[in-house]
Image (tube, rainbow, N blue to C red; front, side, top):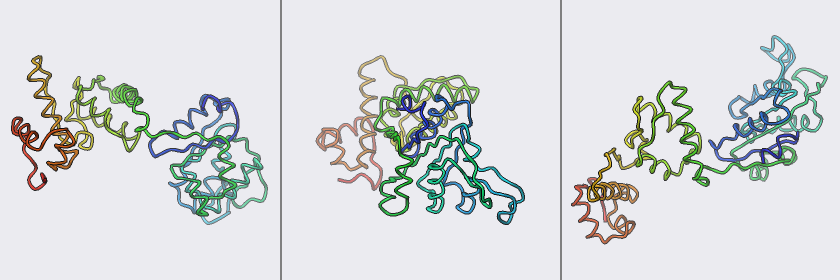
Length: 303
C-alpha cells in the first residue's frame, strides 16, 4: 500500500495500536516518495497543551498574545514542499479541527494574529490509535475532517496478528542495538527464543525493542542471551539456562521440568486446571511434580 501511495499527494490515514510503527510508516511514505527532498515535520497532538497547539501548528504574529515577542512560523508552514505528520490526530481539539479542514481544502494557512493567508504545499499524513469512527459518532471528531484525512487508509496490524515478523524483528534489533551499544552481537538461547516467539507482545514493536535492549544490558557482552535475562512477563516461571544434554533421558527431564513450571504459572497454580491443561490426571500431575522436585506456591496451589 505504501508503494502505491508514495508518489501521490493524497492524504493518508494510518491506524493501529500503540507501538505498531505508525510514524515509521509515515516516514517511509515520505522518504520513498517524490517529496523525499522536502522536510518531514511531525507533531504529536496529544503531547502539546491545547493552549499552545494552535500556535505550534499554524504559527503566530508578534504581539498576537502575551509572550509572542516575535513572528513564529508554524509547523504546517515549515513542512512546505514535504510531508506533515499529525500523530494522535484523534486528540486534536474540535476548535482546531475546523482550521485544519480549511487548510486541507484551501492549501493556505493563517498565523494567529494575522489577517492574510499564506500558501502551503504540504502532503498530510495522520495517525491515531483511537477508533475515529466512534469519535465521530460521539461528536468528538468532525465527520468532514475525518473523510478528508482518510482519502487513503492504511491499517497496521498488531504484532500478535503477524507472529512471523517476530523473529525478523528480533534479529534486526539485536543487530541494531548491539551496534549502537558497542557490543558484540549475541545470539538467543533456544529456550529464550522459544519464549520470545510465543509471547503475544501487547505493546507491539515498541515493547519488543525495549525487551531486546534490556536483554543486551543483562547479557553484558556475553555471547548468549539466556532465558533468565528475559522480563518476568515473558519468563513468568523464572526458567534458567541449562546446557542441553546429549543424553535423551536428561534432555527429556529438563523439558518436563520447564513444561510443568510454565503450565503451573499459566493456570495460576490450580491443580485440577493444570492437570486438564496438560492432559494429565491429578494423580499423574502430582507424580511428575514430585519426580522433578517442583513445589507448589504456598497458599496458591488450589484444587
